[in-house]
Image 1 (tube, helix red, strand yellow):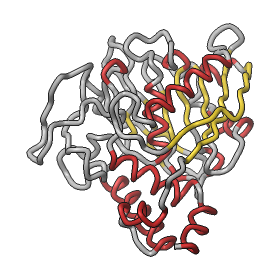
Image 2 (cartoon, one colour):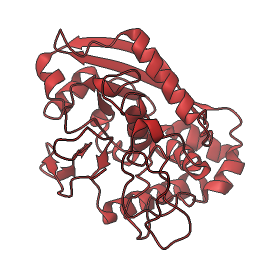
Image 3 (spheres, one colour):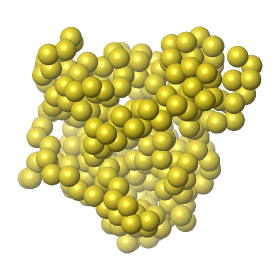
Length: 305
């Protein structure tokens, strides 16, 4: 699958350029999952911030050591506020479909299809339908207005919005490192046709939301930075110079050890072919959760360590 190579940016209210986190497609082709449009320096800065935050809270940034210290026998349960935007005729997803998407999240993050169990689970905390044609048709333009009106909860609450994101994009997400500076803009926005049981061929199993929630929880693309350090910053996802296209059986694009992780949820590719997170990605998710999305537990855990 060929991705657009040009970088697009939008300006926030402070006047600083920020990446447009969306899904791009080849002209005339089907939609694809997403491109978190970050530079190598941005990725490195975000990884450095995570390490600094973990060291400040726990005295170490070694994720394996932190796992042993936390003794996380119980799972992290993420409350989801499911916001359905509609113009009155289109996009009105039922509560049953929202529950089905939550089940998909739990299966993906629980390793049901062969990957690692990340230790994260999701529960539907609320479901709301909002009839607002302009918001529904142009969620990129009205992102701040939408979230200002509808978003609820703190850093550990996933606000998920469905709308007609468009034929060029399927979704966009914020990262946990951004919450402190811009909490009102936190959340995930996806095209309603890409949910579990949607109408987009090859993108109808709900894995766009799985992918975008991965960003919201702190993961980058597996092909981030190509074959260059730091890659995606996770040790057990091999370097990858180009994203997966459609449904490849095998792909190896970097000289470092390991074939490209073409089945990983944080790659590009059809929903038909995605199936896993790695153990390292699970540790990264839990570390980022403790650092950014559950600060009270992080401080409590530090005191008991």
